[in-house]
Each structure stands twice: as C-alpha cells, then as structure tokens.
Amino acid sequence: MTLSDIIEDLHAIELRLLDFEKKYGLHSAEFYQLYQQGLLDDSDLEATVDFTRWAGLYEIQRIREDMFRKMSSEFIETLRAQSSQTSIRLVPNPALAA
Image (tube, rainbow, N blue to C red; front, side, top):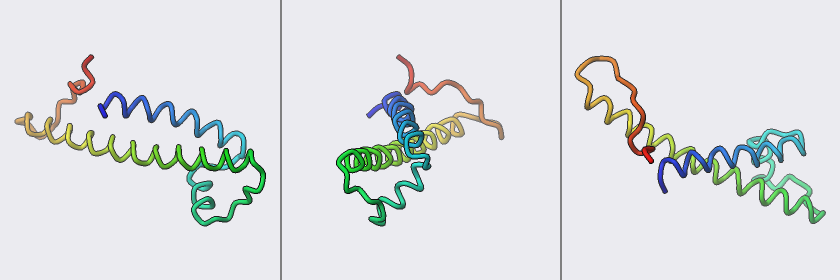
C-alpha cells in the first residue's frame, strides 16, 4: 500500500465515520469502546449493520493511521540524515510523486 493510498483511505474513512457520528451523536472512539464491551443494543437489523460497519471503519482507520505515522517517521529520519544542520528542511515526500 502506497503512502498516497493510505492518505486517501484516511480521508475517505473520516467522511464515513462522520456520517455515523452525525447519525448517532457519538464520537467514533466512544462508540468503539461501547461496541468492544458489548454494551450496545443491536437487536434491530439497521443497528447491527451500522455498528458492524462503523466498528470496521474505525479499526481500518486506526491501522491506516499507524501506517501513516510509521511512514512519516521514516521520512523524517531520511530528512535528518540528509541535513547537515540542526534544522530539518521539509520538502515534498518523493513517495507522493505521481
């Protein structure tokens, strides 16, 4: 998975999570805690489908964020290695070049 793919996924997932947050008036992290603890009544089909999708999207978001942080850290280390000064010159990441 490329850096560009990860960033695009994160933005798309954020929009989908916002839809659920608007629908239920609950932050995704709070929802996920309740979901993991089995505290949500999902006896109706719509809730079951929504909760499953919402939890899945939240899990994917966390994975993609971890991947993005790792790639960002690696890029920073590359920039540090290329710098002879104490400051880092931030340039566009070549991994995003089309």
